[in-house]
Amino acid sequence: MLTTIIITAIISAAVALGGYLFVRNVILKKKKEQIIIDAEKEGEAIKKEKIFQAKEKFLQLKSEHEAFINERNAQVQQYENKVKQKELVLNQQNSELGRKQKEVDSIRENLKNQLDIVNRKSEEYDKFKNEAITKLEEVAGMTAAEAKNQLIESMRAEAKTEAMSYISDVMDEARLTASKEAKRIVINTIQRTAPETAIENAVTVFNIESDEIKGRIIGREGRNIRALEAATGVEIVVDDTPEAILLSAFDPVRREVARLALHQLVTDGRIHPARIEEVVAKVQKQLEEEIMETGKRTCIDLGIHGLHVELIRLIGRMKYRSSYGQNLLQHSREVANICATMAAELGLNAKIAKRAGLLHDIGKVSDEDTELPHALLGMRIAERYKEKPEICNAIGSHHEEMEMKSLIAPLVMGGDAISGARPGARREVIESYIKRLKDMEGIALSHPGVTKTYAIQAGRELRVIVGAEEVSDQQCEVLSADIARKIQEEMVYPGQIKITVIRETRSVAFAK
Image (cartoon, rainbow, N blue to C red; front, top):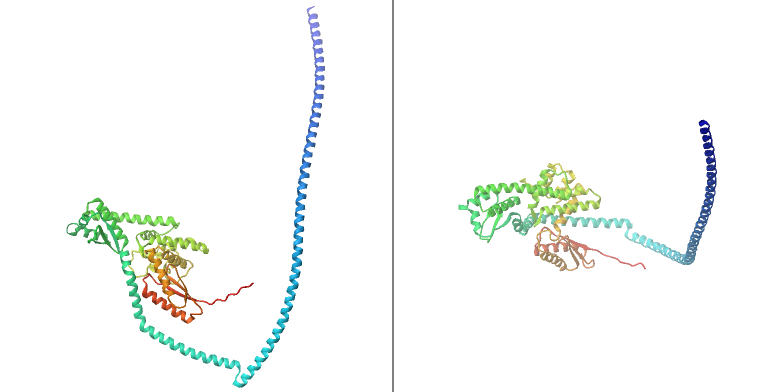
């Protein structure tokens, strides 16, 4: 009985479950159909919207394209108008050229006719000339070529005789006066330059606060000053000059050592022979270190590398040497930069030019006791420390004391002249400098026939322009010699002055 009930319950449950599943499937089927319908409707709406948007985009692109086409058409029309205008102008020019061509042809025809007339006249002239020459040859008994050769030989012999006589007279006079003239030039040069050069190169003034310090520097029975002179190699002049002591020596480094040692001794107050030797030794060491530092800093500033230590020391010593009031180190730096600039402009090696410019005056600061000129001595030093041959040649030839063998050599010579000749570079008051130039020009203008004068190269050359109608070529030589002699007699100047007299004839015409 219980089993039947359970079976019946199971069957009922199964029937109920089957009905539920059937109903559920029916409902899901309807929902699926509804979803498909809704999706189709939504897709149709989206399709219509996209079609509408595409049509709008097409219309927009179409309008932009039409605007672009209209713009291009307008530009094309504008270009066509310009082309038509140019074509019209070219047609006008072509017609004008045709007209001018006709005029040229007419002128050419006229010139041809005139040339024919000239040729006929020339032929007639040649005929008459030949007849005249023939008659002259018959009268003279020789041809024109023979007469010409005879005249040339006669004039050549006469000119040769006169030239030989003149050369002989000049050579005899030169032999008699050369020695006397050379001595006079040397003496005049010494008179002009020796005092200032000696003072400049041999004396340093040491200023003191009072004359009492002079006595302390001299010491008891002069032992302090003798110890100082022995330690430094400098002559110390203590005279009546107020608040000043003169340090005299040809070596500028020794003078600098003496000056610095005196400064330390006076500042410290302890002045006795043992202290003097100690201070001088200390100052010498400090100065050598400063010299090396100056040389290294100069090479770094100029971008020069690989120099020997001794060459660097010589460069540092230039700081304590001057020439006509111009500091030698500053002068060498200027020459180095000028040489590098000129070499770069000419396409040469600027580094080698700068190196040669910096080293060109090292012979002036050498420790060697030699009678060689400073240029040749500097070349020998550079060769000793393995500098390149073109650099050594540039150093040795910058005063033309030997042959220049490289393109760097004339650059160094030019840079040295530019740096030394620059107004204000050397000791000279600007007013006296300008006055000297004016006096030089005035002396030249005082001669007859001179029209213009120009003092150039800082007064080392005087250009004199003369009138071609008033002065002949032969008179130009006499004029330059007269001006040179008058300048030499009336003026005081360093070095030498080159006088160049220029005479020219100009013919001017205007093409209209």
